[in-house]
Amino acid sequence: MTAKLLILDDDHDILLMLKSVFAGEDYELLLESDSEGALKRVISDRPNVAIMDISLPQKSGIEVLKEAKKIDPGLAVIMATGYKTTQNAIEAMKHGAFDYVTKPFDMTKLKGAVKKALECNLLSRKVRYTRERPQVEEDLTEDLMIGSSPEMIEIWKMVGTVADSDATVLIQGESGTGKELLARAVYNNSKRKNRPFLAVNCAALPEALLESELFGHEKGAFTDAHSRRIGKFEQCNGGTIFLDEIGEMSQANQGKFLRVLENQEFERVGGNETIKVDVRVIAATNKSLITNVKEKTFRMDLYYRLRVVNFFLPPLRDRAEDIPLLVELFVKKFSKKYGKNIKAVAPETLAMLTSHPWEGNIRELKNVINSATVFCRGDILVPGDFESFLTAKAGFKEVDLEAAGDDYYEVFWSMLEPVFDGICQKNKGAIYESVNMGLEKALIHMAMEKSNNNQVFAAKLLGISRNTLRDRLERYRIGAAD
Figure 1 (cartoon, rainbow, N blue to C red):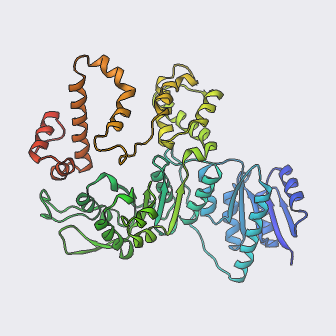
Figure 2: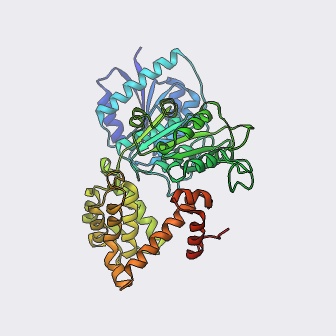
Figure 3: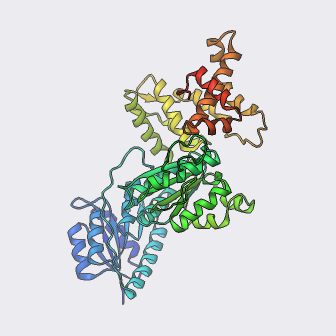
């Protein structure tokens, strides 16, 4: 029996082109230019595979997809679009599309996708099944990730496929690639999206405080534990928790965390009551966990338990075609924020930004656009608006703390060199005192924030006595000294 291929597109030129492409293949072609005609074809002809355009005049391709899957759940649908938006890919896969392709078509890949879709359809007709997917319309926000490179399209397809499951997710990628934003994309498209989403940075907290942060503690469990504290897993019951920099978690906490993953239960620090929860875990790391496993700093059983679904976010330098989209997004965002009327980015500016290595990835690009927008004097961003920022970044790389030694000379040189002239002009004759005071104040303030204002943990983190810490808190007027 000849397989039936339905093609839905309101552009007659594309219909004719695809007709000629598949004419030599062993398919019965069903060509339609309107939504209702295509749905009637699904009812009457029961096609095996369908290629549907997302942008249609009467109904959107997503709506046609949903109705077609109700009629025939086994229909393998390939969604096509000329608009490379994140949410289209997620929605298509979420509502049961077999694949998602972008225009202009790569005919070799399209033929391959149709062949795989047909194999899937023939298998599904042997093993009949129905599975309705929730019909959720998601509002886009400026915080959602964007990207239309082939690598990112595959990620959006994967998000749409796994979001509704409760599977544990591991996101790997360099710093600044948007791991938390990807975690939120999974959460926002999941059935838990109306439940809590909490993020915890495992690298920012000392071991004892991280345990309390995740699992809570009972009154009197340690000094300054004046009352019971509910941990993030308890707060997040029914929702999703995002654990960033999971590779920094101590092995003691790894064991307790593994128990939560396996049994969804734990005890608060200093407590005996076993607490049951229902929490989906999304973890992220900028390290190679498999290397950590080999070095015996990360548990192998936890690694395999985490990577049920494994995302790898490519660095920005490997998807340069996404840079214009990101630039447009950030320019609009910061123009609105600062009340500017920036209408465009000059072509030579875009070329310069596209060729830049962006070692800090999307985070660096965002910060550079932010700064350039502030100092832009016209309504078009020109290369001169970026010169000082890109020059300052050009020789700056994320510092390898192990290679930097114990005095952090390279770290502070990198920080001070771009602003040193300005410090000299502002603090003539008092540079040493001003910089030292600023550094000490920043260290004290940061340690208190990372320790949730717990003076015992902050003092241990800094390696100073609690009396010294109190003295500095009072001197710099940071919070309220106990």
